[in-house]
Image (cartoon, rainbow over all chains, first blue to last red; front, side):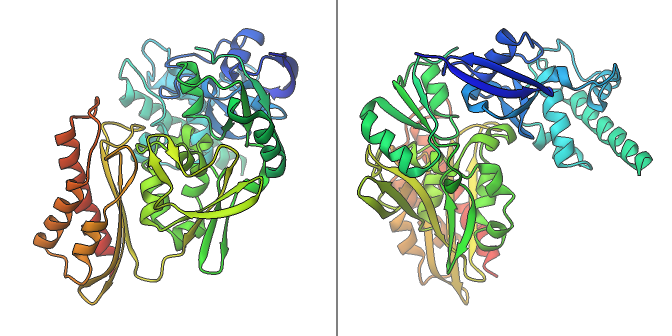
Length: 163
Length: 287
């Protein structure tokens, strides 16, 4: 099948490339753009390891076609830290030991940062519901929830300091 | 896992999509949220030569009020149903259902129309649409026609939607004040399909049931309307006995398929339990 030319923004950088229609967003990111931070887990939209932002919403990039991202703004875990400073969710996962093997972590981080935009002041229960599309096979959920709550507080402090 | 090769089309209007559907015929599949179709393609359960992506058709998105009806565009994603103030006020059953579907990421892509038109009785919206007495607006080469959700489902993946038609709108009667409602769903884990689930929409006159509609999810090859159970309740006060009678009638029409979630006997029993819970919650909300 003929390739389609697509143009999108990935972590603020303009990307123009030709893809087969069957190319999944996660494969475009990992193989064409060498952004291997986004992981492939279950490949059937259950585990959330491939979670990225697409136009300000969390999506599972194993179940979005690259051609569907024409004109879209995509953000991956590589775009989280800025100027060598960790994003609050990255700091939270580091401080609260929110990872063991680390495989689910990029998806967890990307979902956590978007969730905290949607709900900057969540309860523990809301964190669990908001992160329910991400599985950790080490079952390290306790610390993942703590890490997200840590990041929430950090982001609120930052916002107050700026106000 | 990569899907088999296909050609991709992204029409900007329903007219353009219908034209493509007409010329490509049965080699084409409509792509909505993709969270059923793309996994099926990866597993080679579906191998369409063409995908017609409906995501660029803005006219198919959005929720609006039209007289006594709430009109939902078929391509409206689940999270937009969840967050809709209009639905929270006029059809609060829908946000309650959506909160029990899949997970936040999937709800950002998955659409109500895709969920309804896929024809999978394990999906939640079909039985809910039956309980809501929803009307489905289908558009084909000869124009639009309206069909009731109750009657839309013919069998596993077989619906009233013809090969050359697109589901455009879901029209739901707005709830009158003191309409009771509930969706009780048993699932093994977040994101799973229902082992059993029941949707109830009900009105009471005094302490007696004035009207009730019951939809059952994943209890047979199609979503079920529990007509016998409904009729047994109308005109009666809700008691342990009337609820047990309704649950027994609903269970008698269940023919669930055995799978990882349980055997037929277990799923049937759980359908009865879900209906009992949904009736009790709906009744409490009628007040």
